[in-house]
Image 1 (tube, rainbow, N blue to C red):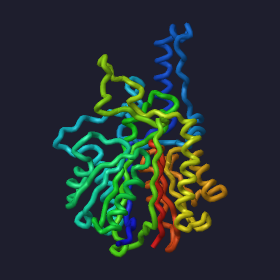
Image 2 (image 1 turned 135 degrees about the vertical axis):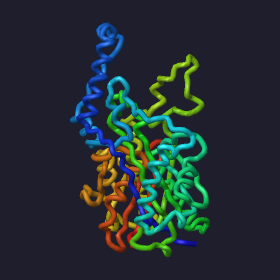
Image 3 (image 1 turned 90 degrees about the horizontal axis):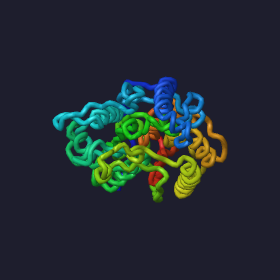
Image 4 (image 1 turned 30 degrees about the vertical axis):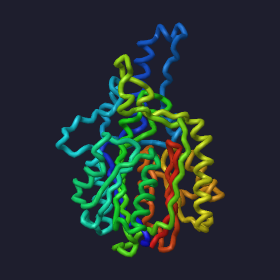
Length: 373
């Protein structure tokens, strides 16, 4: 048996930024147009008018101030309100592969490794641009990795579930090193025309290199333990898929083909589930709240993270104990906790213990306890 360790991470950040001000301007233009076009039905009480959005509403609801996207022109066009991503030929690298390769190269560089040292690629993301062939295999080819790869999807928990799968294989000896990569094009599954969620997501890709601790070339994080859990719920759902692509009448503008959630139920049900999951995981490993140097939580909502941090630590967490990147990146699904870990872990000292946790649709929750070496 071997000891798995995180030896490198990488973050690919798109060039395009959408501020709350830009997003509100586009959304309100769309809402005003829809209200004007449906004025008679609204006047007759047959249709509710669309509410306008505001920067204050977005920050209060989420803590988000900006988001990075692969395309902003389509999103900010009130006539379109979705990203305009060109159709690529089958001979070109897919957009997820393009994002993933950048993040993987950064992770390899940080670890002092090359593609020749890796024998597994797991592409773990909330949405994949195609059913098959696996995106992971395309990433594997683009990097020149010998071995194997596969895709997995556990929505916002995909990264931590992928880390558990990779760590287990490293521990058993079936692989020496694995890249868990999370290319998240969340702008493609967000309904930008829905006031309740139009501000939530952004695009990014993260990569985590996991290898045998004894082979680490420099500072690294030993993976002490991983734990995953799921419980079925319809409160966060996206019905898009090849079996539901078109309605019998030929129309495909279905609201349920994009991200949907019952926010109030999610808050009520997910928060206690995640808090208990983390506390139980720590207790099983003999780790007290006072032993925990840092929490890298899923970046979905600031209020949710504040609640979880307080429950786990038994007090209000300091900003350096529970770093947020939500204000800059928005919710990037499975990649959020990895961005936080990548950007806020270098300052930890040898022996410091931290916990990575992601949670979301499923419901799903995954946690990874690590120790700095």
